[in-house]
Image 1 (cartoon, helix red, strand yellow):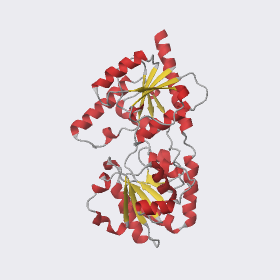
Image 2: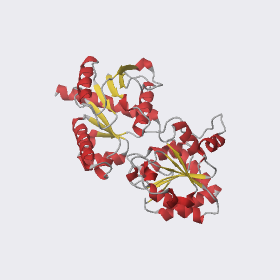
Image 3: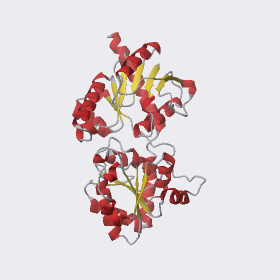
Length: 374
């Protein structure tokens, strides 16, 4: 079986993590009669692939373009593909072989996050890809249900495949003095509580996170720093920093994965009360580092958190504040949630995701043959 995979989505985003880690895990999987044809940006190739199972093809056309439709249709025939996997909703629909599409979330159908015209085009692209796909992979049971309820996808056409954290996110320490490194590079001081900013700030509920930390700072006998990582759009949307003057605020900006793993390893807690997530990879990354997590009971976050994190209504700032204070003042409570986080994180792995994805490939191929025989 020859499977084409659109790896042009490899970047620093969550989708980029999905592309790189899934491909690495699939090429490292046990004996299978498949070969991956990886279509990638020639200036941004994916490192760490087992070359014995991979053919790399540089794609000149850009994402979201008409040119990519013609290029992938030609490559489909030239490369003799049995199946094509698009890891994002914007799939090349012109391929003639069966198409598998991964849908990470349905945020554009639930929240106004773009100007009306752009959001309408994105929703059209979702619908076209879902209609064209022979099978759909969803990151979570929650997204699988959304696909059925919002877009009317038959249950049998969707398979849930949980993703995992990258290998950088682990409780082990590196050779450098990580706390000293974080202090020098980001002005981070122990103890601190982490929250995340984002470009898609409307669903991240950063304001509730900061309000909870304001209440916690007034009620805690332990003084702590509030560290905000990620693009600045989210926190900038909340107004002037003077509004959060009592938070002892530290903004790191965008931060690379190895440094973010360090932040998670030494944080007293990570607070992520999003209104909706298709999976919620940051809370799994934090749990994988042994960081106690406080998150929402909405979207897929409850599903991912399991019994490894404390969950709240995204509006329950008082409850989150009390939990932060307890983690700061009670070492036993902090240790309990650290152990719970690591235990829950162990339930997710890229090797498991690879095996389940390959199973989707084989079932899709068998379905193709059974349809052809009929």
